[in-house]
Length: 220
Ligand code: PMT
Image (cartoon, rainbow, N blue to C red; front, side, top):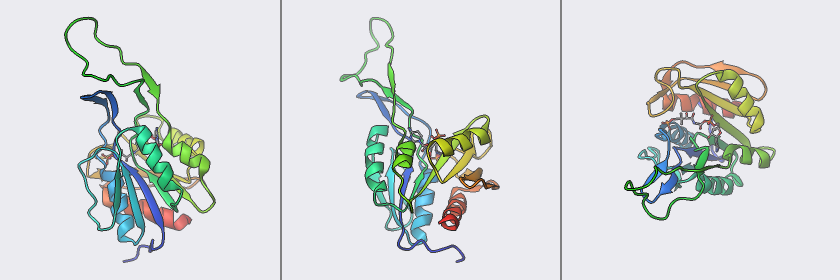
């Protein structure tokens, strides 16, 4: 096994989608399965790290022993758990697909189909979890984000890395076949804050997790 040991490191990973309640039976969500985040968690645990996943609603489970999972639903809940865990973490990887907006106030009872005009759902901006952690990052903490893009991929990713004070960003594009949501594979380009860019081939999410952790270990 040529991979660097991560023994003694505390790693926090966000994974999966967030659900933003519209009423007691409906939500705004997205297609994230959690596979990418959990693959990073599994691989970090295999390398000896102490791993916590702050996870939105997903059906995947860790495959390595010892991975701790904190289940949350909304972006606000994810923010609270992530801020708490980040305080004691050496490395954080933000692989979750966090909803950017949430309904202003969820309806207390099920919105009915009968009568009147179709409802208008007013939205408010959710907190940006990665950016919040970026602002409170201490020396020695490594903060890694993802960028899910559809166009102007490299520019958008570089911009997000800067704006959120990330040390590294993993770009995946919805334009690439076999990349992004739900698939067992991903195709990524890793940009680091020191200006290096590495483009990888299409591979399994577990292998992508290895590439990401190799880069993290090399920069620490
Ligand atoms: O879960 P899978 O089905 O395996 O799919 C994996 C994935 C496509 C979800 C994953 O590889 C990925 O790209 N995750 C990030 C998706 C995303 O929302 O990207 P973004 O470009 O909108 O956000 C940029 C970064 O900020 C991300 O690290 C994101 O986690 C973080 N963010 C964004 C918004 C927000 N309110 N809070 C955040 O922390």
